[in-house]
Image (cartoon, rainbow, N blue to C red; front, side, top):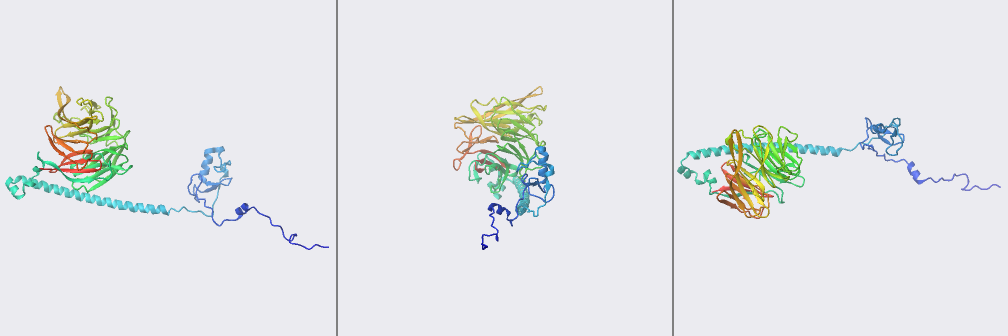
Length: 516
């Protein structure tokens, strides 16, 4: 008797349970696999050229050139970087993918377009600025010519007629009388932060003052201000560390324009153009720069004083490095903070070589060149009193006098004015320094303020910010600050018929004019 069929009989095959993980691998994915970079060089794939896609025997893909370079460099020991399977040159097989995804670089194109637009705007602004500067220079020359014409016309008039028509206040001579005093006429706050500036250079021909400036911890440079209007200013970022010194010259480029020389703690010495703010040359220094100076006779030569008390001699025609390094064992390895190049003893002829006077933290000395062209020799100043250390140098070109500002630890400070005398005997010239006058202040000077000697008058300050002007015989004037402030630099200069005194603190510039 036959059995009735059931659902468990052979009419239906039993279901075979498949591994879920294996089944997931078998299901084709609708999304393409995004493999767009070579795992060796991480560059994007290409469908042609040396970086087209190539497969090894193990199945891993690389750029053709990368795979061949790997096999060539390793030789018989070459292996796949992913699975370490041995590979040979014959294992490399080129493949042509069905789809090749291009890298989206539209963002880069947008940035390039923005950069081009910004550069075009910058160039247009620079052209406008140059046009304005040329107009300003033309107006300045016109005013100068008018002033000279007025001055010559006033000199031809009788004194009574001049007083009736113009009044006594128009006489330029009244602005620089011996009894005149300085009065503040302008102030410029350079920054609300403190300790952002250190030194300055006054350029009378351009009616300009240039100060060192710190924008932030990585951006340092120079700040140009017009002495006619301190609101007319411009920043020039040409250093990455604190700028210690800046000097100016109209001779080195032989184009009548002002060239600025600056150095600082970023171990660079930089020549910059004051007219277009461009960096002309930049030299790398072996140590931090503390001072710089243009040579007084050689238009192509300039100097840099380093933190180890050595002097580097540069020539603008040598754009790679310095020509000579000067150092004497009699000098201590401390920072050289002040340098002045001058031509002493002009009575012996205009061919007298220049002298470089230097002041470090411990002593004052000079490097003297000879007419024979030999290497310069170092001459230590013996007139400096024991216990006093120099903190500034100032030179009066008209009086041929040098002022050494020094201080004694914790006790007092001193201003010593000296003059060099030369004597000739059998064709040899001997020099000696003679003291003209000296003033000792009972207060200790903590700040290394740069002093000035101009027209026989010494300008210096104390730590409270009071500026003193005095001669050999008497104190001429004291200028009290609005509040306690540390003066870092003082410069006295003549601009046309005006006698100006410029003082610099760590974040402020003050202008004083002499009025009778």
